[in-house]
Image 1: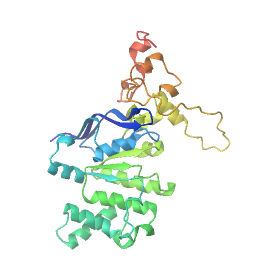
Image 2: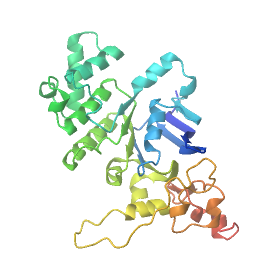
Image 3: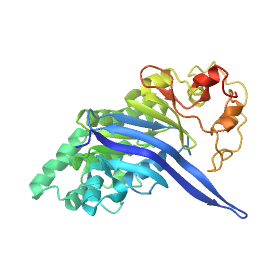
Image 4: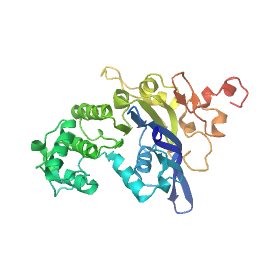
Length: 334
């Protein structure tokens, strides 16, 4: 059996933007690579601003869309060539928790219906008693109890309860990986800690996470490894705490420095002028996508997209020519 649970190889996803005069191919994700080991379980964070390609990556992993090129490989099996039985196993072992904790529910059914569907579709229980025990175990894992929530309708629960029920539903099928797409963005700050605690408890139980977020503070709290995306490309990757503490890519440095000081006596000075968002995002733009906004841009940045260069001894890498040794020595045009 493969030691890699999920591997993404050179995944690229493009979309055609239809206009009145021409059709442009917009790159949503470009040459993305990722490997999640079978053990130990880990939380891999995918971070970036809106439109950076985070949800595109989640949709590729969940099979909601197919890559334009590249592969999604689960335990050694390319999912594009998987049999129906292998696809069924994949859907069971790779679960999802979505951003909106209310939109995923059918408001006409009680919460019990969510768990009954999972038990029926995956044939998890041999009888009703076994099914009830499985539901109660899953709810206890996320800090809830059956008598408190199962007979209620979704609108009778708080946002935090609804989101924890989604984690409990995913846990019931004993997945190997949960894709959590912005799971705390629509709950208030007092409930975020409880949901992040659920993720860490499930990780301790052997479940890995692909955690999609724009919130670097939560990435710092729970993430093991982080990939910071910009316009579909990886800007920087490494251990989450190290990337956030010591960013090397100019975009990541600006992203972290933009977090406001909580001191109300400190006022934000100046204005920010941004270029058009899609200026470097078409398929025929060969250079670094951050070039129009980069304070350290060089002519070489427009020639080709930079690869990921090592910037530390612990595996941290940044996609920036500032860390190319030939550029440093002046051997390439800079």
